[in-house]
Amino acid sequence: MSQDTLSALLRCVRLRGAVFYYVSCWEDWAAEAPPAREIAPAVLPGAEHVIEFHMVARGAGWAAVSGLPPARLETGDIVMFPQGDAHVMSSAPGVAPARIEPDWVFATRNDPRPMPVAYHRGVREPGAPAPVGDADTILVCGFLGCDLRPFNPLVAALPRLLHLPAARAGDWVARVIDQAARESTERRPGSDVVLERLAEMMFVDTARRYLEGLPDDATGWLAGLRDRYVGRALALLHERPDRPWTIDELGREVGLSRSALHERFMQLLAEPPMHYLANWRIQLGSRLLRESNRTVAAIAQEVGYESEATFSRAFKRLVGLPPATWRRRVSAAQDA
Image 1 (spheres, one colour):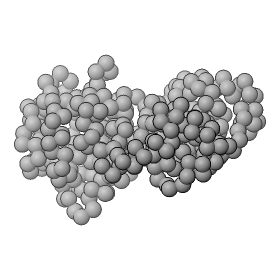
Image 2 (cartoon, one colour):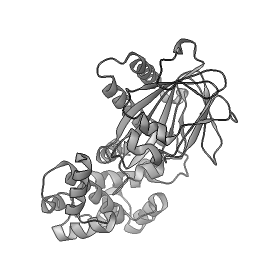
Image 3 (cartoon, rainbow, N blue to C red):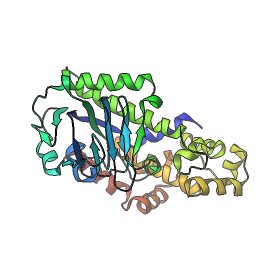
Image 4 (cartoon, rainbow, N blue to C red):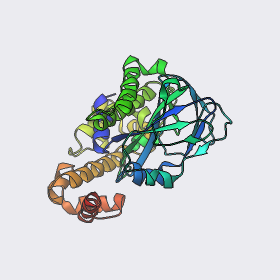
């Protein structure tokens, strides 16, 4: 597996982090968070997809999402909800949760961050200073935003509830959580940026450790990265998307026949190699459209298309809009 493949994708889907709440909990407590899509415009404006996460700085608790068994959390654990599910954080399974209403999230979106919140049989004075010294449990909670379109195979490869126990996280993650807690309470100059970067680092490390723990029979994009042949093929496609690849040439590069490589891609990624390449090229093209002033023709050539017309047809087929129209809409949204 090439580590650069994961890095290349993360750079291209605009990963952004934000820490929003510093939560102190006493005795029996529970909070129900709404689906991320209902609060995304308030917490990370402009993000196509939002992932909520919680870092346990002190104490213990439980994380639960409908349809899955709850996960026991200890000090130093991280839990995230990659598919944006509504979920419950609590002192124990079965405690009636206080629901966090989307209207409240929108009403407080411009308040100083991270906002202190205290839980004890319901919300107690959200936003007011809380005596955290004797709290049973302290959580640092936030959000990660990323693009889903045109192409982001990573999010689909992650589970609905992703739990990283402290024992698997490594010493540096414990230090990250401690630092996040300090930045949340001290609010020194630059704390917002520090917390954003800590959140992004935490997500990348959690994704890597999830990859390392995948069972042998796992499928999906991360499982493909780990596979000897598919991982090498993905690295080549990501490193040289402009190359006029054929499946025969890609197979020779990784040491498999055309049919064997096709079968392996279908088994792990549920799509053939050339289809994956087409999607990756469009994702790269969308990034260049958003972040540069280059012409559509120049971008088409850079990502591997022989003509602007061919690129435009492929882009519209995947995104639903021609490249120039999509660029104008994205630019207008960013300026709004």
